[in-house]
Image 1 (cartoon, rainbow, N blue to C red):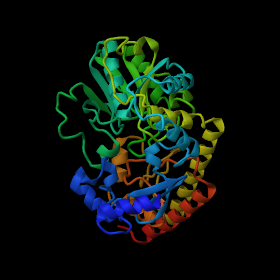
Image 2: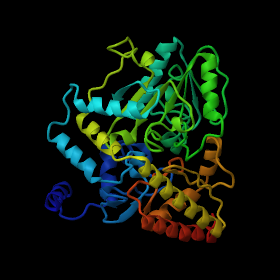
Image 3: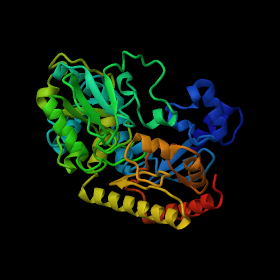
Image 4: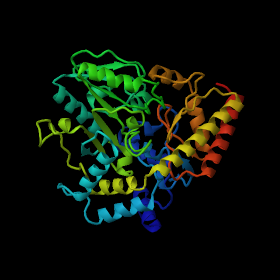
Length: 440
């Protein structure tokens, strides 16, 4: 493998030697807008040049400059077992050796759909897609068809992919770039979308088809739902005759085996899934009650399709990953995340730095704020200034890779060890002290 890599690099650069992140970024910007294929990767909100990953294993990634990092990005939550899990890798290799795409149904599509439906109470049927964006976009279309209404309510700071109607006041990469929406999104495209504050119950008019929400908001940092919020949305939708869509692309199968909403006793009408259910490969899914889902073509007249939907390699990876997750797995993830959160809070407190470290199961946020964050306005205020950027780069220098944006979260995995947590907290203690000694 090393010989092949050296040969490829010699062909590309014209001279034998390790490719650096700087040189790759320079080349990438000539052929890819901004040098990246997803905006947050460009380090726009933290400054500097992104590292380019060469390989990964378990809790670690190594960049093309040979540097090793304890990785809390974990493909933004798509990886839960750790990088390069042997069972997932074996499943991918075995599936790929039999062909990478057929354009025809496979047994693994059925098995994965059965696994999701078995784990999510009230989800009778699912349709697989290739991304979370497709899942959310399709769920909205389905809700409009089912209700015969056009209105959509979403919450500021919640990110549901980059379809036009849902980009209004989105979190994640949209927030990172300081955008309220996107150029090219017309007034008409968002004309039926009403954006309201997270953690506040909206008033639903008779033209609202659905309310879509991240049950735990994880695209404006980590913002937990206040008691009664999700339950109140269920009641409001029932009263108005609207559907409740839980976007669990991040939380689904990460907080527990199935849906986070089940943990709080709420049953949405539709769910969106992604990330974990693909074992690190591109996938998405939306599902819900049979009466609603049977409106999708070819059973009904709501069109949705995808050449690579139910891809045989992605479904193989997803099945391998989900089969590894049991009650003890989630208990371990929670212990790891709790230990990291407690350590970071103590380190910040000892240094006299005001930091909020919300944690929920295997999700963790870091917000430089005196007050807990409960909505997008609070998240934006916490993201102002350069404290997060300074923290990010100082941690990266010490071998700890966090997301290059204050609007993303950290994803401890099953591969993160006690030593990883201790090393991370030790690094953070040094960084917080450094920040306190040299205020902006």
